[in-house]
Image (tube, rainbow, N blue to C red; front, side, top):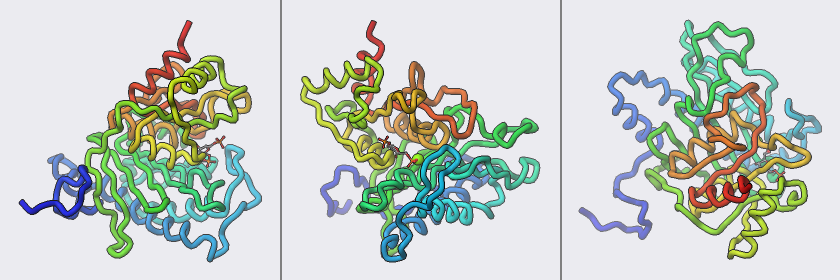
Length: 338
Ligand code: AHM
Ligand code: MG
């Protein structure tokens, strides 16, 4: 056994494992695996590399700023939202096993092929979350959720994908920050990869990532304090007196990534402007909830587990409370107090 050259406790082996190798190795654990999922994940990895390059060159290529249009849920679209959406569509569009692609930027899911024609999976995504932060070089990200398409004959395209988060077969995000990070779960823990630009490959850096069980950090847009329900105000008042730190980037992927690595809790409660919550269930909250749970954390929306919500619409919003299990419980103690 050679001595490790690095001090990171997470580097458990001297072997270099790429995302591609890792996906193939996981697939081999399932004797009947078709390789469908690997095929899709490799397309997402390709899209991530192209988007990472665009994000880093955005100022040089003059693609920062607003399009002057709004997407289907009323959010102002940045030029890079549209570019990232197109890149994902181009990278995933020719994968023969994808039946449906659904994006935050598009009103309706795009049906590529029926299940009978081989379209066994649906990929739902937010192409560039937190994009309003792009102009100031803050970390932004891509979030994705993979579901199996259903057998039912759909009345609407949404019928193929409106399933609770518990049925996700894989979920992940790519953070375009000081490094490009790919977090992936296929339901057997969470693995973290970083992009090695010299090799053009994502390399495994933390296998089976675990969220710290507790940490006195809350991540919330506290400027909305007056419009939060009493229970959240009560929690914040309590946290102020009990040694907590606040950390809020305003970019969900970056805030959740920090929460996973450092511990703490991320919240987006109901507000007067967004009484049902601001974040989207199917391509923001659900994939993040799967990742957080697979890392040993908790994810709650209102009075239930986020992953148990039966969705009613592709762009449905939800409240979000997720992170270290002890910290989520502390918030719930205040929110649910009599
Ligand atoms: P977006 O999908 O339009 O980028 O909006 C989602 C973002 C999240 O990344 C972030 O957590 C949240 O909006 C921040 O909202 P606010 O500015 O209200 O705090
Ligand atoms: Mg978003």
